[in-house]
Length: 393
Image 1 (cartoon, rainbow, N blue to C red):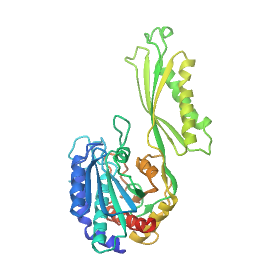
Image 2: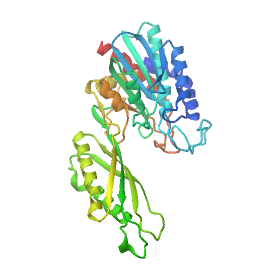
Image 3: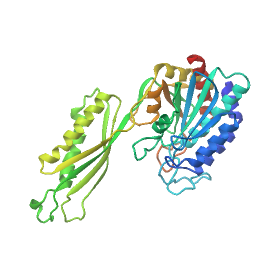
Image 4: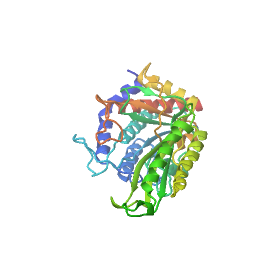
């Protein structure tokens, strides 16, 4: 067992207790006041210089002096999901739960803070500054369309940063494995609202109206055909409709149907193509005697890992957990606002396996993890900071 992991396991039960406390008291995006207070107290007690209210409800904690500055990030927000688990630490807040592992991310980063404080106390912290980013609102954006990462950047959280790292527990990934790859590993995501307009009439006299539901069906087929026939097989993209609302009664032609969906991409050229094809599909409504309008809202860009930082994470994983613990992460169409941090400085986002048997999937009412991932994650995050301080000096 490596030194960092052995030290983390020595206080593992404290980290698990912290995770369970946060799990029992989840907070939605930009409402993470209790969580922020806890991490401010914990890191401040370890000798970190703490700033609260960053990006509205975020916390920045620093250790060390001068450059280089290496940032480690953990997201804090929960999801509007009603938990179905029955263990003692299940959510005590109706309709809200930590269904994505952000409670574990916070506990991991608090654990990394303790390991780094111990290193500083023993004279083993390299020259420079470690900056911990406890970030609000990864799962959602505010009224201005800005997520927690954007708000923290606006408040100066990334000023002077030479390298930034983020980790995510993988409830579907083999326990103990660190998975990381260079380049685009998670997709960019925009959302859209497409409104189809028709003309209402009695169902017994359909010739007097324009059925928005029928038109919407043709628009949906055109959208699906865009991926199959308008996007190159060599490109990767998604156009998905998640909700459809329209109509007022079973015997009335609908005069309005609203479709809401998302588009996903890794490359800007694919994003541009998807925008064009979405608008072209909406044009079907005009050809059928109705009309359509689209509200396209830019979302998170793709998460693109810096090649050097990805290599550093692999080295840190080997150092923290032992040889042959790191593997490749297969890119997928999920989105993450760590992308904004990785645009502000060379960065790397990686996954740590935490699957139970059977796995409890993310964003599910029964989500859960193998809690051994917390000590492992703390060790890897601390190792990332130590390696980065040495290599970016």
